[in-house]
Image 1 (cartoon, helix red, strand yellow):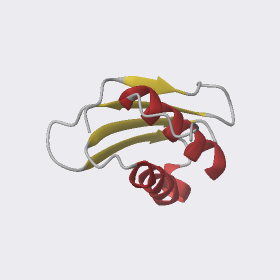
Image 2 (cartoon, rainbow, N blue to C red):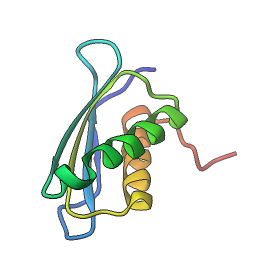
Image 3 (cartoon, rainbow, N blue to C red):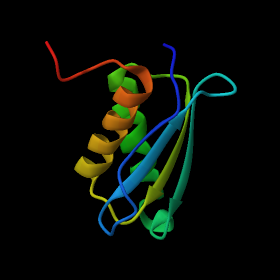
Length: 93
């Protein structure tokens, strides 16, 4: 699946900014910046990875700047960024 660089989300409290760009190699490369990474970093990465694989995106560089987002917000922002990066619309039949 061909992708271009795209973003979704904000740097507001309770949100997460997600940037997806083409990967230099194979697989998903997730870069996380979060003040709660020690406590919730693995959970944030897991939610992002699940959202991307559910979407069908398996090769990408993903940068997340977390400001205390809930799992549902992370999933929504990752999905929105993936839609923008690929042009694949998951909300249409």
